[in-house]
Image (cartoon, rainbow over all chains, first blue to last red; front, side, top):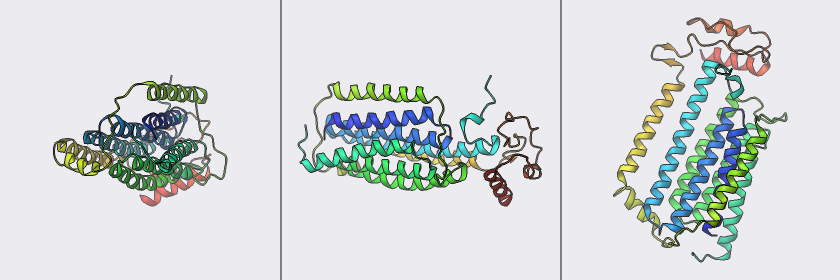
Length: 101
Length: 223
């Protein structure tokens, strides 16, 4: 258990999430990728708080802000998925062709 | 450096690697519902790692929050996605090669920063961190804490406004496009939906598959 190990795992989580965001077609799967990316950054924040910030509680406050961002992302993402399904009948990115040349 | 017992080290690496593996399985499984539960498993593994990293409060609220969120996500999966049970093979990806390259490059770059960068060596005290966090949240950082609450309230209002089918000026989908369920027909061929008479024209679309028929029935039942 070390700072390097924790940052490595966080980087892997972030990278898997980024892969999902770039590759998936369905909106909900893209949101899962975003969640994983935020999850990785949360883990890196806590690791840096524990090993490099001297246990300053402001580090944990930053982690709480990141979790808030995660919750907001999920709620707004679901609302947008609902809206876009209702108005465009689209549940994957390929169905949104309106701006495509 | 923080000296930890061997068991803590083993648990750290076990749950850390498990979180990455379950995260990977999210995008490899055929079933949308299973994908959301793999994501929950990944979050729980990260929560356990946070617990080992002495952030007990964060770890528990992460697990609680994600348990609720993944239940909602599974419902969304069944609502919006084809193939929720994973009975058919499913591989809905685009630009796959570029995505893999982007993921690998990001991992190499971020991992190199994590391994080779020189961070200050100032570990936290072993006890009392949750108490210190409570003092901080209701003391010096109260503005941050309260702003997070206000932002969440704004999010709730915005999400309801976005997702509500009844907007302030009538039905939210008045004048929007009728569904284009035939995959060969480019989207948007159908004339815009006339105001307040959408359900008649939804009923008899040719080429609609079973899943979409079920969706139409759902819409009509709700209306």
